[in-house]
Length: 393
Image 1 (tube, one colour):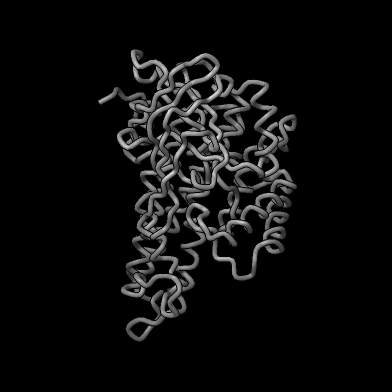
Image 2 (cartoon, helix red, strand yellow):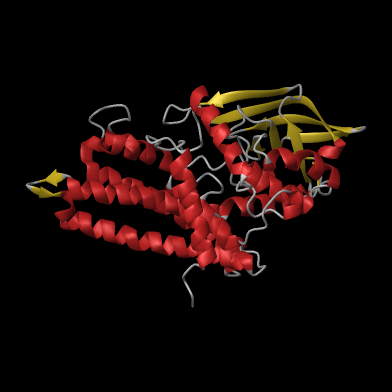
């Protein structure tokens, strides 16, 4: 089996690195877990996204007729690897990697014409209105309603944990259109303009003190009927495609690899009990264990890309990659806190904070990683049922 990249793929990797050296500030420390930022940094991230769009890197894998480069899946993996490793603000919201591909698959010609160009150019920001206060892991139990009224649907309900809702121009929205149907068969998929009257966004502050998530309330919000994606009452199957796009990335593993390398460098430079921290047998064993785990995580992500390149649907395999990558990040965060000791609790901004406080921030945020994009329990259920053919418990 050939594990090396082609010369063309390696040239593309070099092009990305050169671009990032030129465009990212010298003191760039990352865009934050969800790209959250004050106004100045947000504007930089918007301008950076448009530079990616000029190269068509935002829509690297999209068909050329829709504004992409039709790049192969391994080229997309390389792009995601490099952007994640350098903590670059790859995209803002879920437009390029989830919304666009979903509209290309299921959207009408008019939806493609009206909405795809702004995603390609980096002009529009999208959020994902799926989860609700009582419908997270069991997403199909959602209760937000959409009632047909002539040429419109009237939306009432609430969404939660909606990243970028406070910045978004558009939202992909799941709502129940047939309350009498089985829960998976009475849901429809909509495209919502966030400026529509009746939409209210309220910020949620996380453990890091950041307003990255939001609650979104809908009070008699009128969505034109032509904003329905796919068939009425069959939105669950459209949403399943969107979620598969979300879970199949390598970014979780590579973000951890960058943090891991910084921990190794810290251990090599720091002193403990008269010697280097790296000379502590327990530290060396933990770092060696993590190094092996990261290589395994990378291979799982490559497997997903390889299956996609062959035209296969990596449903269970994408769930394996997602679950393994998010749990590995939590193990890395825990190991980092143990290595740094009390210093690991110092927040960014303090001159005493090891690694500029990144471990403290990473450790707090890692608590959410096995919940966002599907809990580990749900991922295990998908792996068991769709991957191994086991019966439902």
